[in-house]
Amino acid sequence: MQTNNGSIANDKLNALLKRQSALRAALRAEREKRRANAEKEHQRLIEIVGRAVLANAEQSPEFKQFILGVLRTSTLPENEQRFLKTKGWL
Image (cartoon, one colour):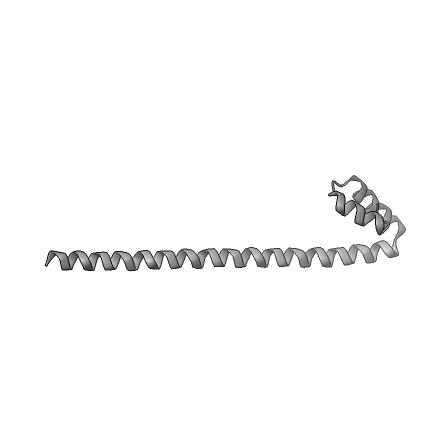
């Protein structure tokens, strides 16, 4: 009889460990989904703000000069600096 009880206890423990593993995987997936959504929202924010800033800079030479000053004093990667130079923003 004791072997049967030990087997039942092991089966229960194995089932709980399997459930724990599934829950951990579900948590990882949910965290990744939230991270991806946050990144997507951040990119959308950048696009919206960027469009508004560019539109305003086209209408206001003073504002464009302000943005040029911001870009000149910003620490940007070389590839971004090159791109901005080709577009006349540096």
